[in-house]
Image (tube, rainbow, N blue to C red; front, side, top):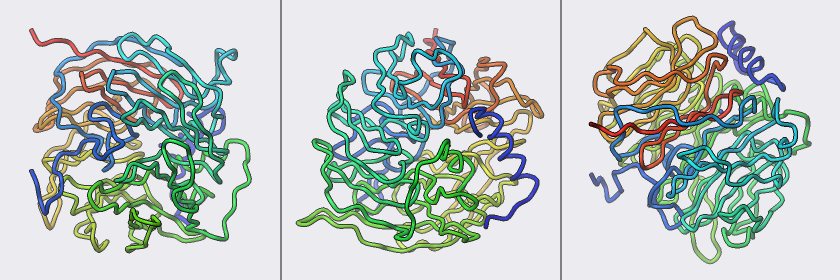
Length: 451
């Protein structure tokens, strides 16, 4: 089982309390820009949970220096994963149980105008396990959202296209190089489905053949704090190389004290198939993030639950370096095409910027005057957007725009005085910023034009 200490216990308790209802150039011929790629991804927007197939939480598009509050929607509604954004700027979010507006409680997938916050549509075709995932968007405007019964696809107007029964619930999804939907449920079932019909491309692959799933109230809670002490064995979103079809994910075996980073490959063909590449039980205490593929595709970045940020060889799984952050992040890191890595926040953690220097990690700068409360986002070569609080402050958060080269604050905007943590920052191509709180709703910020 995952090692227990007061730090991890306090983190689990905090998440439990906050949830209230119960308890997140070219190189070797590979593309260098971390952006949505492949035949199914839109050319612009934020179509998947961590922006792209590599899980980078970064974009080469230049971001604004200044933003202003625009709207707040879904107050007092549980949100467990970041919003996604289509090329038109509409915002999609999956939600769990709500503490207000009971007449809307049956909807667990919402779509809003990204500038005004006007609700465009919502769907009751998914249940509250949608809280574990971000809606996935394809280049045709179709939406993909799973719960603990099925993976579902919707038109851009919100009409159900198809529904495919699944076992377990997914932690978001991605697309294969040939355009199929791929995801792993929390009990380790790999699914590859056709986007047009939901038909199986390959038969579901059980990573843990002896594990089955019986739905229970709020059984998604274990996925919020890792998997070693719960039945959430695959608690993060896979990343996939759009050139090779190699995909990477975390997996914890029952009663195992460490978590594995696993590499497999999806191979198109007649018939399509997946093959096992390697695995490395390098994540001490469990996983703290989804794996993140470097810009040149040669490395993976991932966090364990024992304060480490690790870089591994994508081809072999060999650990290249391990950096002691002094805290275990509560989400995935952001990594820019320039090799700048910004880990997510944790209890009492400041802001840290790290450069991948080849055979080691190099600290660029750090700030201890604020506590980071979510997943940072990097834009262009020199801008970052993140949610922070004052040190020691349990509730009350604000949005910072900072210079990613130096850590200097460019803009500081209040968000919510009663919110304590966020589950992912998202940006539109035009520079709008969206911040979902764990229970506070979804806040939108508009870019302020430069004078």
